Amino acid sequence: MTPTHKLTTLLAALTLATTPALTTPAHAATPPPATLATSGHPIDPRPDTAELTHHLHHLEKRSHGRIDVTEIGRTNQNRPIYNATLGTGPRRLLYITQQHGDEPLGTPAALEFLRHIGTGTTPWHHWIRSRLTIDIVVRANPDGSELDWRYNYGPHANPEYGHKGKGYDPNRYHAPDLHPDDNPVPESAAVQRTYAKTDPDIVVDYHMQGRYTDAHGREITASVMWPTHPDVDTEPTDLARQVSVAAANAMNASHPAANVSTYPGGNYRGIARNAYGLRGSGSVLIELSDIGPHAEQRQIRSALTAMTAIAQRFADGSLTRIDPRRANRIPPRGHPIPSDDRAPATGRADTLD
Ligand SMILES: [Zn+2]
Image (cartoon, rainbow, N blue to C red; front, side, top):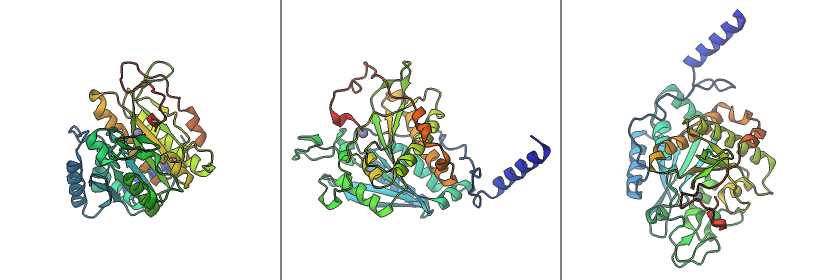
């Protein structure tokens, strides 16, 4: 490095350090504060819906108006479905957690994300909130969560996608031509309405999967996928591939054991990943592996890291400079780990996504 370059670099660094709220171009991103995933206390992996309601309203109050919590629907057991909005920026993100009731860990990650991004007061926090508006449907399926099953609560339904006697699979009822008023699944209709209202650039849907290895026998800790429906345009697909790369890189860096693969999901248009891609958003699925109680804290933090990295990189512009072809380098998911009773493939389509 020449002295001139050094000086330029130093000046750039000083500028960044003093005016993060005003800098937006290429390398202007102030890194996330070191406190990101180290609040010190274990995070409750399974707050019940009453506790979730309390946490959300507490965060709303603590944020002095920076977080706005709204009820976007009611379940068949009359539980509230919440959307939390933060930020005032022009670029829009929509995060969704726990469409499948027994896939819980995206929800505590979302609460931590709201606490971190919504109540922080550093220049970085002000900067990111000025760049983005972020909506989070926190626990899209409260009934399924309370019942600890995948489906919504719909015991009288005989669904095409779901389980007779239990309910519908909420992640099959997002198709663009299914109007929310005609949607038999109130949870999916609530997400559809939030999508229509917020018109997000990026949608990220958090799920959980069983245990798998990669081709070398190393455990997969999370899997990502972009839309695979053939009618999704190139532009939203490329954006989703950029988001997938950003999420995979962030999660891989979050823990020494982290190992992210792609997800072998289906093409069905009612799956959120495909449906919101068909509607023009960069739409991504993230599946955290259900490794076991000993790994839950790091899995929650890994999800939180992905949420933060996607937001940071969308805000600073670096996300859309990722070569979408880099997604091809994310390795495929390998075989199930036989000791896990959830992982072996049953061959049923509704175990996907
Ligand atoms: Zn799922």
